[in-house]
Structures are given as C-alpha cells and as structure tokens.
Length: 81
Length: 410
Image 1 (cartoon, rainbow over the protein chains, first blue to last red):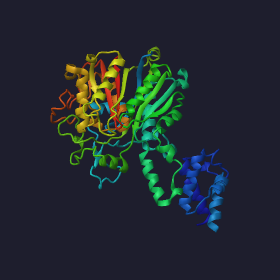
Image 2 (cartoon, rainbow over the protein chains, first blue to last red):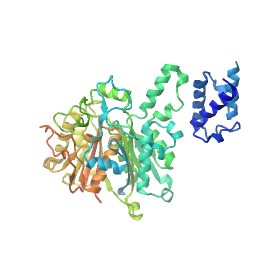
Image 3 (cartoon, chains in turn brown, yellow):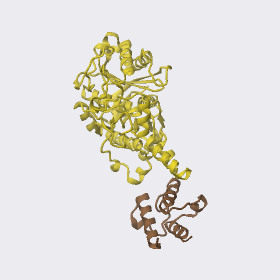
Image 4 (cartoon, chains in turn purple, brown):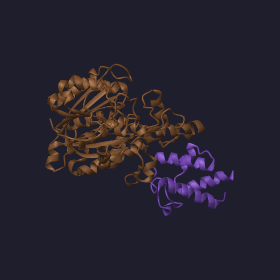
C-alpha cells in the first residue's frame, strides 16, 4: 500500500466513524478535542484500524496516538516493518 | 398528595410509528405480525413476529450516535422525544433537576450481546467492543434519555420482564405523587426479535407456532390460542404534577390515579393458575385510586394469548369485580402488536390513555372461538365507542411480577 492509499483510507475511516466533514480531518486534528472522540471511541477506532490494516495496537502505543497525523504515521511505520 | 396527569405520549409499534399512526392501527383492527425479516429464521420452529418495519431514527439520532446505541435504546430516545414534544413542557422553567426518567427494558441490548459475542468467538478478547457494556445494559435507555434531553431528576431502569413497563410508570407516578419530582418521562423499550431472543422464547415453549397464518396467531382469550407472538417497540408517557399541568394549560390525556403491585411467589415462568395475586394486584390499584370496582369501565388486559395467562387473568378479573366483571370491557392490545415484553406495559398505557381520550375501547382482534374459561366481554375484533371513566392496565411478568395501573378520565 502506498502512503497516499493509507492516508486516504485512514481519513475515510475517521470520517465514517466520527461523522465529520472530510475537511475537518486534517493531519493536526486532535481525535478528542477536534473530532469529539471519547475514551470509548478511541478504543473502538483502534479496533477498526487493527481490522482494516491487519495489525495489533498495544494499549501503550494507542495512548500515544492523539491526532489524525499520529494515526497515519503509526500505520505507515507498521507497514514498513 | 399530588394528582398526576399524563400530558405527553410517544409510541413506536409494529402497527405504526408515532402515537397517531399507532392509534390509527388500533382502530383499524390491524395486526403487526408477519414473517421475520431481520434475520434468518429458517432453523427456528417459529418464523414470524411483530417487527417494527421502516424504523429510521435519523431525525432524532445522528449516524454517529446510532453506532453507540442498541436498537431498543434508539426506540427509547425517539418515544421519549415524542412524549416531551407532545407535552410541550418547558424544562428550564420547571427546573431540570425536577424532571426525571424511569425507563424499562426487560432484556436490554440483546442484539449487541449477540454481535459482540460472535466477534469474541472469532477474534478473542481483542474483538470485544468498548460499546458492549453501555449498549447492552437495560438502564442504557434511561441514561441516554437523560443525556439527550437534559433530564437531571430521578433516573433509573425498571426490570421485571413483561411487567417492566408498568413498574416504570408506577414508580414515576409515585415520584410525582410524593413530590420527589414535578414531571417524569416513564416508559419502556424492547428490541429482542433476534436469533437469541426468539430461540429463548421458542425453547421456553411460550410462542404461537401458527406459521401459516401469522396475522391471526395472537388470539388472546380465544379457545384455540397457542402462545404469544414476539413484538418489539417502545412507549413513553410524560407524567406531570396535575396542578402544574393545569396552570400551564397543558392538554391532559388522562390522570393516573392508582397503582397496584404484587408477586405470585410461585414459579419463575408460570403464573399462579388461580390468578389470586393478579387479583390482589388489581384490587390494590382500585383501592389506591379511591374508587369502587364498579367504577372501572375498561381493562387493558395483559392478555398474552397463552393458555395460562388468559384463563388466570380472567379468573382474577372475576374475583375482583364479581358480577361487574361481565359488564366492563376487557381487551388485549397484544392481539394487534404482539408481546413487547418490557415495553408492553408502556405501549399499553399509551393505548389506555388514548382509549380514555377518544372514549373508544381498543379491540381484541382474532377473537374466534369462545373459551368457557374466558367468558368476559373482550371487545371482539372491532373497537367500540363507549364511556370510559376509569380504566386499568395489567402487566404480569416472568418472576411472578404483577403490576396494575389505574387511569381516570379528566
């Protein structure tokens, strides 16, 4: 998967899950403050990402993911390995 | 003690979404039973139920919120919103801490339990959704209604299987009567027409198996009845301090004027065959309303269409009302909408309030073959215009729970 494909898929997932306008899903957008995620949403989002990209996100790693950019960077990083 | 007015109603039923459509379905003597469409029923001995067709919560619940709510809870939010809008109560003027919600469900989010359990088997613990607990719990409806509409008064769920709806309304009624709250949303919601829900009631041998004729399967009080028909939906009432409702010029459908509660203390699913504790329950409701048995014109029966319920309930009515039992009208709304389990009492309370408002007794449809054990006037097949000054609504649940509401025309 290319970087662009991963970015676009992550954005699609976030738009669908949080029901927000695509233009709100910027790299800097904070999942909680900007997109309205609560703690349950964050766990659910990690599960959706695990499914979609066939990976396992540990609780420690998940805690470091705060923004849309963090999500994309994490998936890219995992994809490299 | 205060009097308690019903100033708002909400309903989602298999014969109509919204109070107006529901009442239309009632007076047209329609049945909501048909082949199950929401899941593959081919391996089950029962292939039909009363499902709510074309339910679309979009106007009330956005798509993001929908993901976080089981179907029963979506029903609950919609009917509570309808009742609040119908009553046009200014919550901030009353004070939001003075407005609460007691909301019932017999089963809770059973679809969510099924879905997540499937994921657990497939993927192990990491497949278990963080929304499982807040979606499945029976009190999710009461809590979500509080959040959505900003109701900060007394709030919890009532759970007593098929009597849950009546218990919720009774507790809400008592809270207003005692002055613990000035207004309450009370009701119940159920969405248990799922593989697991159907399977459970099939195995308990509680359901009608009239697969070749679903629309005529729910036939309370008929000699050829063979079990109940599962239904889903929700009902809500806005209850209010009567003086407050009068002062603000609210439309009052009826007054809730009494309640009774007992338990059979006999068997976890079978009712006491002689109906003595159901009788005691109705007697308590009549007594607490401060009326005589002869003042009751109409009873919205529990009337499940099971052999034991209908004969036991008939015996109980005769024990309480004596010769007057043959003069009053008794009908079963379950003949039309099936058995909504924890929501049944709530929807039937809506039906009873509307019966009083319109002075029309709802029918018992599919009444075909008289049963010597059930020899009262069940308002067979067609609604009946009549004077209804006082009415009762019965609900009896697995666990031996009996709960009766008393209503008065205003």
